[in-house]
Length: 145
Image (cartoon, rainbow, N blue to C red; front, side, top):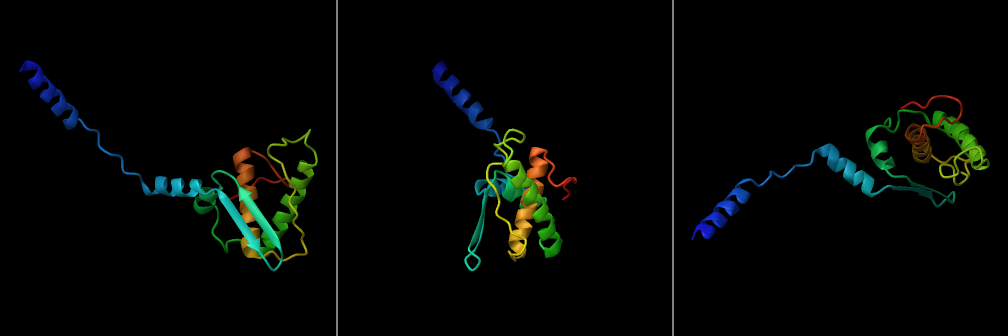
């Protein structure tokens, strides 16, 4: 009888000491949703181009820290992207000098083609994200958000 009473007391204590469930904050939910889908794909069938960005955390960064669309002009984005792409491609071609794990593939970005605002916006923000995340400096000036 004592063991039965002891088991009931232990079970009552364990049930009474149940930890409260943590309610995720909206920031945590946003971070979880954004990091689950870390592939950004931008395509235009008319111009036959496609950009695929596979980078953990980029979607969350784009949604939470990047300037909103419309903040920069398309001309500004095109100019910066051209500078960044030129430096990026130069680093891809120098694997002994620059980390080949960071600079794997060349980017075919031609200044005479109108890729549209969306492509230029996301590409520019990827370059900013890349520089801040991996502490790199492309094109000779500090990246800004």
